[in-house]
Image 1 (cartoon, rainbow, N blue to C red):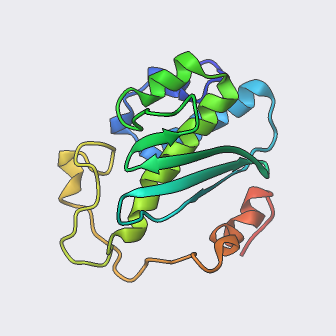
Image 2 (cartoon, rainbow, N blue to C red):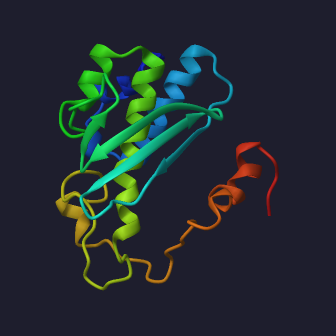
Length: 180
């Protein structure tokens, strides 16, 4: 595909369900950054755990600057405008592309993905037989592969008390430094 400043443009060129969700997201971010000549971009997302009434807050920083903060009710954005009342489900990507400036649309999609991923904190990934994927929703969960997927029991890590350690091992790699 040609370079495009819209990170979601990769979705016009391939079926996202047949890709690794996280890799297609990263490919879109890379294509957008390359098209705009952006040599470095860092997103940091913070999503509160759900309260008993399913409300929570989500925040996104881009290159250290807070760019989005949403109040959520389940998968609906309560505020602020222009997000108020929007569902993060089907149609959200199209809405971002049709409504928001490119940088804000990209940030909204990154924060939405972080919200979806954050739900994994409440799932016991070591529970035997537990299916956590969206059956048919991505490459790994296509019917021809899903039954062959094996859980790596005991590999779960919790970065709640040390969020900086989450990317600690990646910093050298991201700086193209030689690692052992």
